[in-house]
Length: 291
Length: 72
Image (cartoon, rainbow over all chains, first blue to last red; front, top):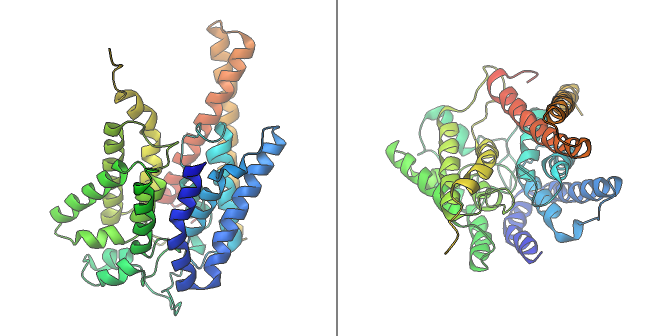
């Protein structure tokens, strides 16, 4: 439980920045996520005759993560429905905390991308809320990373989902998790190393890839979920490498259907795909018992 | 909520239900044939059905978002 509340504290700097940058509308979406997560979990557990466990903080984390992983243009009800879906189907259907296969926040986010794609656009710039392209859309259009000031991306003055815009605030929160040993740091370390190597090979600025999109939020806060990520160090490294590979593939080639919304980011797909390999990685890299 | 979102939502529910119930009945019959006790077979088939319906839903949503673009 200590870890869960530590995670909520770690997300707070990025959440506060998003409220400062996007205004009260960001707070509405984060609260919609947290509220829906708590209600969905309590209701499901009540209806199925289980002990209500919303006080452990895990549902609140899912809600907060999902509330921070949507566009400011998304209506609050889309956030609430997606969060409830993530909690019920991504977490509770398999028996709750520790038994889930997928990260519930990411499962809810995939549902959001599939069911509410029209609500993602337009992306808006922080502070003035003017419609603007995200750094990854600029990369897709121009093929270059030079057009976006790296400092703006680091500080959080770029368009993007509510909670992903400020790499600085996410890093502050992540540092807290690492210092308190609440997080499996090898996963983001492997993911960022993979992104670094691939960006250098492609002749692109690695810092652009670090700070753009939801890599920082996804790799540091979602991929490290102790219930859905590998338990052992070697498994965690392979898990992180897989995430980095899928994310960079998506950024370069994407999955596009002509005439419809084009996804330029792959963190959701990357984390959920690697979640499927977690049982295998746990089995494969289980240390031999000491004699 | 836009009509297209409702259709997509319903399609997710259909995939979940069809794979879930389908897997349950097929899995239960398979486990029974193996000689497993009925209560244990039901329990295991139920767990498997939930797991594989979630995996199928994940694959369905990814496929729809990425390759087919159906309803988008």
